[in-house]
Image (cartoon, rainbow, N blue to C red; front, side):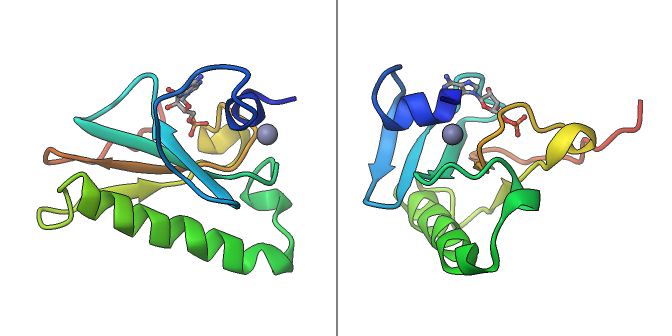
Amino acid sequence: MCIFCKIIEKEIPAEIVFEDEEILAFKDARPLAPVHILIIPKKHIASIDNLEDTDALLMGKLIVAARTLARKFDISEKGYRLLIRVGEWGGQEVPHIHLHLIGGAQLYEEIRLV
Ligand code: AMP
Ligand code: ZN
């Protein structure tokens, strides 16, 4: 079972900020900004590359949850960033789709090739 599936099963702890039947959101263990939340589907999907066409609604729900959490954590007005890394070259570390919600400070670009 992957580490995020273990968080879903409550086998390892996380600071959960939202949960429904399909989605879980929890604070990132190594936050890059004052607000850094990971929003994941409860269905194990390894990456965007593994999505089925029928997962489109589920992925939309992740984005709607991000909007709601951004309001809840009071970062909507100033703005924030949503990020999904995909695979090795995308820098994805955990093989379970996760949408990063990052905000609470001015963010600058950090994409680098070296
Ligand atoms: P990515 O590099 O896009 O795959 O992001 C993985 C993220 O998961 C990183 O920001 C990690 O800090 C975070 N992470 C890894 N393990 C945990 C955990 N047990 N609880 C919370 N966040 C985690
Ligand atoms: Zn998983």
